[in-house]
Image (cartoon, rainbow, N blue to C red; front, side):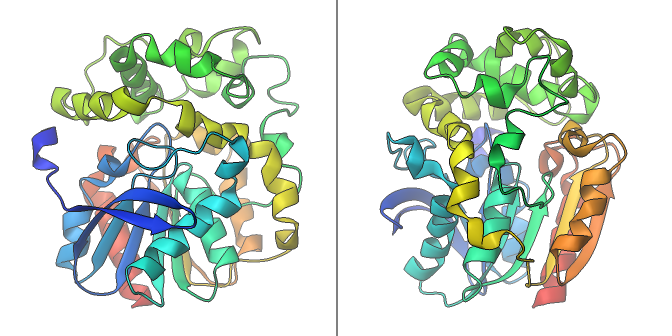
Length: 326
């Protein structure tokens, strides 16, 4: 798909104190799709039309800090509570009293927390790539026994200004290497970062940029480059800098389960799943945190960018879930 084909209607939606550039198309019950890092609404290019064709209205924001959406300076503006509030506010701004949310990568924690914090309006939730679990001290994502002796990107991203400068030196190469390192074709390369020295740069741990990816065309890569070129990566990386704030900011959720109908899908070759162990321990532990987890599906030969790497399989899972909860 060439980037020129991504020709949808975008609206500026006021929500929760910010304005978000949001793709809004279709008619019917509302489905909100949430991207992660370093992505944008373009991540969902293979899913939007099939969901619309199944009778839904789709809203896909470039989330807070991304592109032309508002990008507050203060790191405290990027807590998961604020981000979940953005999502609920989109639904209300579009005139909906209920919606379904689906999120991938960072979009998954935002989707999970939207379900937890906005039960009155969020009626179903699907997460992709990042399982739900609760840690009262979110610093455990930044400093833990498995990462203390080597490089760890979440720790690296806590530095002011340095990560974005490194990645923006050659934005096209940096993005290409990021996408390459986390796909199925490079399985194992991302989690291997912990074997690099603590003082390494993000560029030291990413795969080379000389690989042509079967699921990412030159036009698609250029779309991302043009998207991030204007506003840069400060806003997106601020999501990581806000991690230490999230535990204390959501203490009422310490023992709370997600009550809505829920589902989880991920790629079998996604290195992110190894954050909780190398034998699907993180995925297996999800059951304890849900009242109504309808299914967990692992998609073969897919890595972290599964909706681009395996769009047909992902679309089948999404449409199956929407049918279940409609």
